[in-house]
Structure formats: structure tokens, C-alpha cells
Image (cartoon, rainbow, N blue to C red; front, top):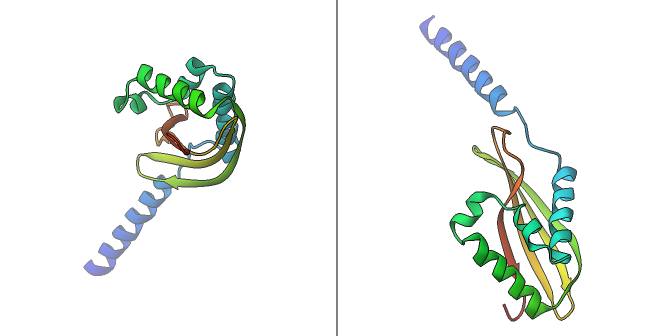
Length: 142
């Protein structure tokens, strides 16, 4: 009797935990894709201040905002004006802390092409907007 009761309590607890874990406050993929379009449109227009507003404050813990702005400007100076960008691959990774949207873009500049991986993040609480959590730029010469 004790074993049966213990198993019932365990199963009930697991069901409750699983149901709580399934609560999803994350935006749709299309909403995050649109955010990516807005983000790259700001970069294409060389509106670096607007583009920087898409980044999470945590992003700037590793590299100060003004330093990252100068880096983005230097990239466009080396590679030329951004001509176009297109989403090539995407992956959604749900973790305990929130949801990561990992998007790879093919970006065409006047003088070179780049592959840029942008990771958007939304906290599990859903009380913060989706922000750029990571941005990696791969191109010849940078």
C-alpha cells in the first residue's frame, strides 16, 4: 500500500511539473523573424543607434555599447554598404531560463559577403521583450 501511494504521489508531482514547464510565453517564430528584419534594416540604413536598441543589456556586459557600435561601423567600412540580408537557417532552443532563437543570415555587402548568427532571447517569465543576446559576424578580412 505504501509503495502504491508513493508511486501515485510521484506521478502526480511529475505531471504537475511537466504541465508547468509547458507554459509558453515565447513569441511566434514569425514575430522573431520580423524582429530580425527590423534589426538588419537598421544596420543596412547605418542607423547604429536604433540597431543597438535591439541588443539585450546583458550583451554589453562583454563589450561596451560604444565599442560594439564602433565595431559595427568598422565592419561596414571594410565590407562596404549592406546591400541585402536573408535568413538562411533557424533553430529554436528552449532552456530553463527562456527561449533562444538562433538565426543565421547571409548578408551581402558592397565588397564582400558575410554569415551572421544572431541569437534572440526571451526570458521564461515573458516579462521582458525579445532582445539580441548574441551576434557573430564571419567574413573575410574581419
